[in-house]
Amino acid sequence: MMSVCLCLCPAVQSQNLVTDNVAVVEGEVAVISCRVKNNDDSVIQLLNPNRQTIYFRDVRPLKDARFQLVNFSDNELRVSLSNVTLSDEGRYVCQLYTDPPQEAYADITVLIPPGNPIIETRDGQVIEGNETEMTCTAMGSKPAATIRWMKGDKELQGKSKVEETYDTMFTVTSQLTFTVTKEDDGVPVVCIVDHPAVKDVQAQTYLVVHYKPEVKIVVEFPDGLPREGQNMELSCQAKGKPHPQQINWVKVDDDLPSHALITGPDLYIENLNKTYNGTYRCFAANSVGESYDDYILYVYDSRAGEGAPRAVDHAVIGGVVAVVVFAMLCLLIILGRYFARHKGTYFTHEAKGADDAADADTAIINAEGGHNNSDEKKEYYI
Image 1 (tube, rainbow, N blue to C red):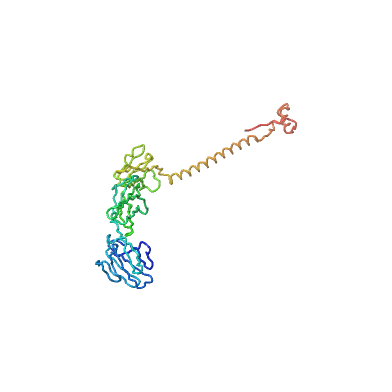
Image 2 (image 1 turned 120 degrees about the vertical axis):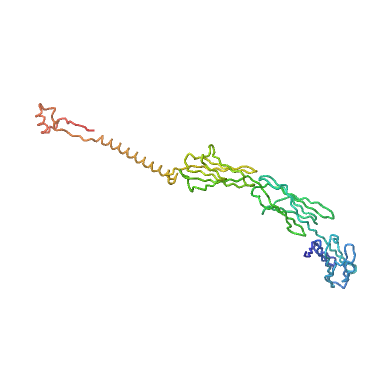
């Protein structure tokens, strides 16, 4: 494991003496630096929390080989401590022999990362619309870790509880509760543990969500509008979890045609005719529930080229013809009345002067003479 030494606090100084607080992960290396500004040849030494001398100038009186001299000069005494344990934690003293003596303090904090997080789920399988509960536990850390939750790419909020165990160690448990949908099936739920010693330590589980079937009826053939004499095949496409084990076809408010053939999810009807019109329904069921989809069948006349659009054209043509016939009838009636009022009038030669003549010969003579004052005799023809 790579050695890491983290500085938690700013430099601690006393007059000319300067040092730094150190945070180090257990098992790694801590480096303590005692630095002097404007040293006047005074002696520098380093003491442990029990005030035992670790280094006096460049000499190590303490019989602990984990301490090694990194640098010694008039201005610095730098010492490394390898394989740090929790017992090494405490306040180390940098001492400068002046008059009076000067001291500066370096606090070593030992970080202990948590063990690998553990996820536990209350339900192995969840039905859509129900709540599920998960817990994530990070054990044995110092300081206490923090836990975050992700469902897919969405962050969720859990409730965390911190328990202190032996030797100022901590166990953190986070509880997550949420309502699942069918879209959550197969989605990863990730527990992320953050700690100064480690970042983004994760554990994950996958949701198993059961949901009732989703049903859709698809027309396999014919293409376009169904017409008399054609064959038809409807396919019932259903998916769910668990996979639908039962698929049924019915005709709403009636029986299926006697020669209709059901093969698995498919409904096959030969030689369509208008008696087959109606609503056909496909049911699909699994252990969660049941769903259905409807198909409304309307069989068109086999002679109709385009079905309903052609019927609209016929209606328009029929309307135009009716208007034309009505206009012609109105015209004939008007013409008849006009001719009835203007019939021709004529006078017969035999009628002219007939009333005044004594006999027929006289009448003819009078007619030929054109008696203007005689009454006009009119004949009307209708």
